[in-house]
Image 1: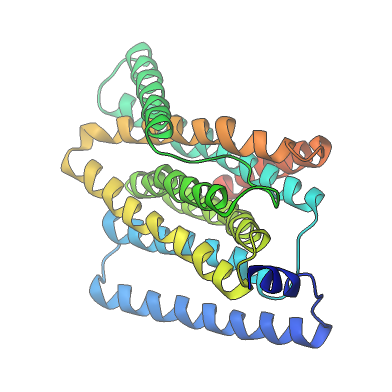
Image 2: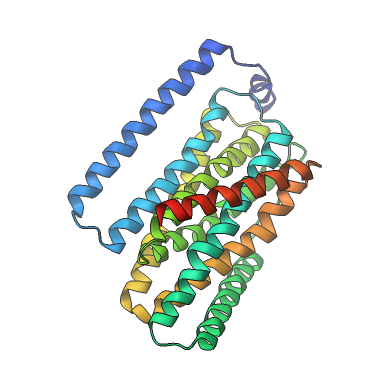
Length: 296
């Protein structure tokens, strides 16, 4: 049965079928986004940090689902394209860590009365702590890296689990940044953009293991649900005390930097398309820098 299902994935979809799939899911996702925004607006009519964190986390989760949509119509994505998309994700996360988390964290510490040296030490310590926590989580939770068609279904599921776990620091970053003027929108938008290729990679991994395209899309979409939950947690944490804000910003940056170096960049170079991956990283960094300026 698995072999028969896997064989179906190798049948290319015709143009009409692809257009119907893309059109249908675009309508569905757009409708869900509008409905969610309307519900959230009625639940909380103010622009509180918690409300902004929930909106940002929901947008990031929806972006993960949007990234998996092509798997409903396409049999596979080229290795070079995957490498470029992963590099783009890494560039966005690097820029977001620096310009939307570390620098605002330093400025927030200065505003709270720290000297320049003390603020720098605080940010450095919090960043290191965030990375160390992600390292501990990475060691404690079972997972695997870079699944391919030659690996078992168990390895693929461990990879999907790892992606879901690594969505936690992204959601925390959205929630923490929601309480910082000029950073919340940029962080949420940047992470949403980098979640698009992430959702596609998860769907590709499941489809390569022989699962149906609809099932692969569904699991990829569900993997993004951790982001709004983590965003609310991050926002609630810094809302308890304003003194925690610079720690939260820098800690989220450290966690994101760990994910970029430990997961995304090695995966983007694994298939032998280093130039495309590096080009994608530069493009993503530049795009996030531009968004941070415009949205800030």
